[in-house]
Length: 209
Image (cartoon, rainbow, N blue to C red; front, side):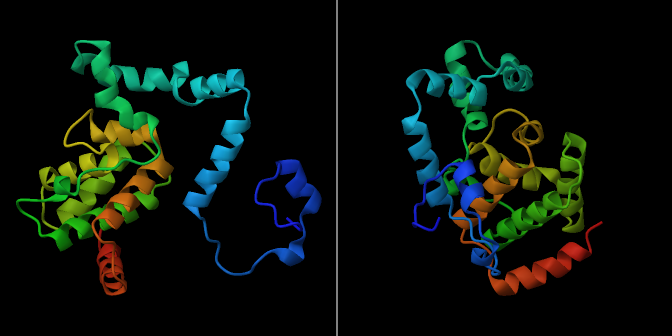
């Protein structure tokens, strides 16, 4: 905004939009600042509207019906639902780094598997369970691994837990953006990917069917 305000309405943005002020550089998305800004708007809502929007966001019937079939057979009391399925209602998760310790794969191989799967998922045009599994399968087969070598890593990255509901079902329900975001978070937790690794692994990606 011309007056340097960081908080403004959509209409105010439209009214003051000036193409000459648009940077030609690559866009930078400051997640922390966006979260702070979102919090400013949330705290200004009337409490009734806040409660209504919360229900629409997390407790709407359509979303609950996607989750319920995967949870019902795994619980004995309703109090067990939140620990099992709480990750469905979060943006990011905070898995223990120990969940990524692998009996068969080195730490570098763990990051490689996860990065290759992330890239394969980013190329998906249709976000369906079968295609998600196909992407994972393509990576593990090319690396001469088994699904059981990769799936614990997916559980940790996507759910923040060692086990939960079917992780591919969870990925389908969470959607592509949140799934990819959590995989990136997990990779950052493990130290990220160097420029050299990125270049080498991109070549490897090109050979994966």
